[in-house]
Amino acid sequence: MDITQLILDDHAEQRRLFAIIEQIDPTDVDALTKVWGRLSAFLDVHAEAEERFFYPELMKVGKSANDAEGTDAGPETEDAIEDHNKLRDAVKAVEKYPVGTGAWIEAVGKANVVNSKHMGEEERQGLTDFRRHAPLQTRHDLAVKFAAFEAGHINGVKPVNKDPEAYVEQHG
Image (cartoon, rainbow, N blue to C red; front, side):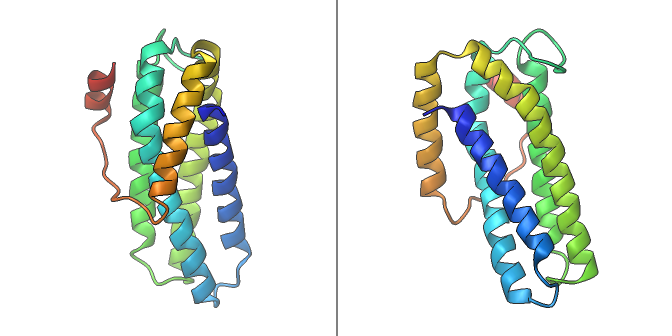
């Protein structure tokens, strides 16, 4: 088991759930509410799990990858935490609108865009960096913690934005 693969698997599930929402008739408020409820909880739990387990370890071993700035994992981690905050805000914005309305669908679409941009960067930068520099045993040990955290929080976590600079300073 490898935490980078678990993260990629989660990304695939996030994409799948956004695609499901896009295919549900807007008048089917019950289905939209249920799928969005699952997706929004999943997004929050996934971000929290990354912040607890993945990014602190990336800060220890990372050297930067692909289009990430810098020569260590600090800038890519700070950017990821900023992205998580933007995503939490986008998810919260969806709650402002009645499910199935044009404004709700637009807000879900904005959350999808924020999430997609983040996942692309993370896959090119942090995950690549970690695969290149973290030992397999570390990747396995973190995968166990990551999977257990997600399983233990299947109904979600309280979404809390974090100060990206303070996060990097704390874990760097």
